[in-house]
Image (cartoon, rainbow, N blue to C red):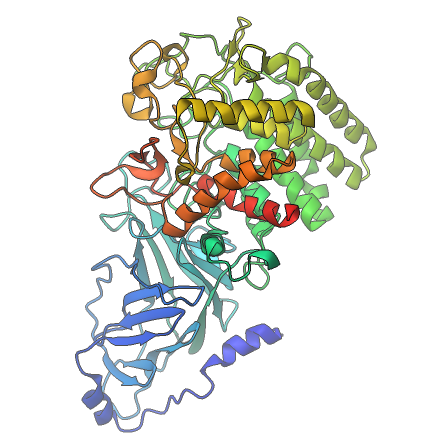
Amino acid sequence: MSSRRTFLKQSSFAGIALVVGNIDNVLATGGNKDFVYESKFIKIQLSPEKPQLTYISTDSLGQSQFKVNPLLENANRSNVKYISKINGNSISYYKNAAKNSIPVWKIKGKDKEILIQTQWKEGERPEPLNVVFSQKLNHCTVLGTMAVNKQIQFPCVLHFPGMGTFRVYCSNPSITMFYDACRNLENSISPDAKGEYEQQYVKIALPAADAQHPDISYTFESVAICPEIVIIKNDPRFDGFRKNFINIFQLNPRIRALANNSSSDACTFTLYLYSEMARYTPELVEGLTAMDLVRNTLDRYIEGMKGYGQVGYAENYGWASKFTSSDSMPSLIISACYYILQTKDHNWATKNYARIKEWASAMIGTDKNDDGIIEYGYSGNANTWNARDDKEFKRPSNWWDTIGFGHDDAYSNALAYRACTLLSEVATSINNTGDSKYFDSFASKLKSNYYDRFYNPETGVLAGWKSEDGKLHDYYFTFVNSMAICYGLIDEEKAKRVMNVLLNKMKEVGFTDFRLGLPGNLIPIRREDYTDRDHRWGYGAKEDGSDGFQIYENGGATGCYAYFTLHALFKIDMCEEAEAILFPMLESYSKGEFEGNCPGSEMTKDWKTWSGECWGYEGFLVDNYLPLLAVLDISETT
C-alpha cells in the first residue's frame, strides 16, 4: 500500500488534462520555440522537437538564482522527432499526428516541482528521458539505494552543490532510474573508466512507459536539506550552509559507494568524515537517510570492496604501499559505530560485528611493541621516500598522502582512539562486555602515551609523526592538534595552549585569509619528508621545501579538515577565534569557491595557495564540506 506522501506525488497530475482533442491544434501550437517555465525555485526549458531539457536550474532557497545551466551541450543524440504542444505551464510530446494519439511524455512546471508523466499505447512507445550534466559546470550527484551498478531506486535525491536539491519520486516503486558518472580519463582507476562523452559527466535516464508500465509519473521537488537552526533563520550569511550542507555525500554509481565525488575514487580513510556529517543530516527523502548511504557503503567494504588506502586497491595505479594506511581501519570502525549508535540497528550490528572486530584486530595488531600506539609499516624516517616513477615509490600512512607520515602517526592514532572508544560502546550495546572492556583498555593505554609521544616542547604543539629513528616531524599541523582536542586526547588547559600557539603561528607566517579555508601545515615540509617528488604535488627541490610551499598538501589552503580546528576552538570556548575562521569560509561556500576550475586554468579550487592560485585536481572534493558542520557549534554556544 502506498504511503500518503507517495499517493500525493502520484496524484500531482490531477487536473492536468490529457485529452488530446483535435491533433491539428497540436500541430498548429507546437511552434519552433523552446518551452520555458520559471518560478522562484526552478527554471526549465525544453526542446519543441523532442522531450529534451535544454535548461534546468534550481534555487532551493527561492531566490531565483539560475545563472548556471549544468546540462552538457549536445548530449542528447537521439534523432527521433516528436510533435509537441504547449499548454500553459506544460508541454506534451506525441509520436504521431493521429487523432487518437496520446502524449507519450508530458512535463509541467509547478512552483517548486517538475512534474513528468509518460504514457504508452500500442505502436507509440516513447524513448527514455535522458538528462546529461557537465561536471565542469556542476558536480551534481544522485543519492539513493543501488541494488546494482548504474540503477538507483526511487525515491532518491538529485543534488546540485551551490544550487539546491531535488527529491525525486516515481509512481511505481518497482521502477529504477539509470544513473552514471564518469571522469573519462585514460588513467582513471575506476572500473569502466571510459564514458560515452568527451567531458566529465553525470547522466540520469527516466524510464519511458511500456506495455508493463503504461502510465508512469515522476516528481522532482526542489528542497534545501539541512538542519533547522532557529538562530540562523533568515540570516543570509548562512545561505551557503543551506544549499551545500549535503555536499559531502556523493555517490559513485559504478561502485555503489560514497566517494570523493560521483565519478572519483572511494577512499576508505574518508568514510568516517561522511558518517560524522550523516549523524546530523535530516532525512534526505522519505525512507532514505544519510546514514543509509553510510551503511550501504560499509556493506560494499564488508563484501570485499577495496578503497584507496587499502592494499589491493587498483594495483597498477592506486595505493602504492605494502601496508594499508593507518587511518583506513579506524575510519571503517568509526563509521560502523556511528551507524549502529545513531540508528539502533542492532540486527545489522549483530550480523556484521565479527567483520568490524576484524578491522579492529587489524588496527590494534599494528601496535608491535604493545605501547598502545598503532604503527605504520614504513619507518617515516627522513630521506626514505622515492620518486613516483621509481618502482619503490610508496605512500605514507594516511590521507595526507604526499607527506611522509610513518611509524607512529599522531593523526591516525587520534582516529584509533576514537574508534576504540566507540567500539567499546557498541560492544556493550550488543551485550559483549568482554570485548567492551578490551577496547576500552586499549583506548586508555593509547591515551596515556599519546601526549608524551607526540608533544614537541620546542614548538609547543603536537608533531605529525615520530619516525622509527625516534625523531619528531613537526610542521605545525593544524589538523593533528585539533583532532586530538576534538577526540579528548588532550585536557582543556593543554588544548588552549596548543591552539593559541597555532593561531599565533598563523599570524606570524601571514596566513589570514580564511575564505580559502586552512592550511594543513603552517611551515614548509622539508624535501626529506615529502613523498611525491613532483612539484605539481607540492614537492620542493630546495632542502627546506620552501619552493613547493602552499602547493597542494604542502601548506595549501583547503576546506579539508578545517572542521576539526573549528570544532576544537568551539569545544574549548575559543568561540570568537572559531567564528573568525568560519564566517569567511561560509562566504566562500555561498560563492562556490571550493569547487570547479579557476578561470583560465586546468587547476581546480579544492586546493589553493594563500594568494588564491588553484592547485587542486578533483574539481569537487567532498572533504571540503565537513566544516559546514561547525555551524551547529554556533547554535550550541549561543
